[in-house]
Image (cartoon, rainbow, N blue to C red; front, side):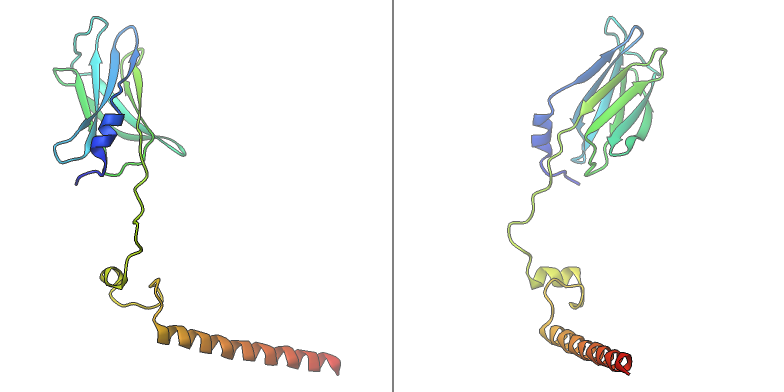
Length: 173
C-alpha cells in the first residue's frame, strides 16, 4: 500500500535524531520501505563510530496517553535495527532506546499531514457502492421515506397534544 504524500513526507523529514551516551550512540532515520510504506531505522554505534551488533533496541510511539510500545529489534552486523511503521500511523514521535547501561535514547519527530478532504461531495452512485440499500443511513434521504417520517411525527404530535388536553381536564375537576 502506498502512503499518500510519502515522498513529500520524506523530503520534509530529512532529519536525524541522535543521542549519545558513554557506551553507545543511537541514530534514528525514517526510510522508505519496498512496498511503499515507511520504516524507522535505528543505527547503534560506539563512541568512535563503529557499528555495534546484537544490541536490543525498543521502539515506542508517543500517543495522547503516553508512550506505546511498537516493537523490539536487535541490531545486525551493520548496527541497524529496523521497525516498519503501520500504514497511516498517526504518531507524532517515535522513540528508540537501547538496552545498554546506561541506555542510549533518541526521538524522531514525524511530520504528519492530515488527509485532504474530497473537493466534491460524493454522489448517489458512489454512496450506493458503499451502502447497498439507501435509506435511513444514507445522507440523501429517499423522498417517500422522508414523507413517511413527517407523517409519523405528526401522528405522535397529535397524540401528545391529546394527552396534554386530557391531563388539563383531569386537573380541572
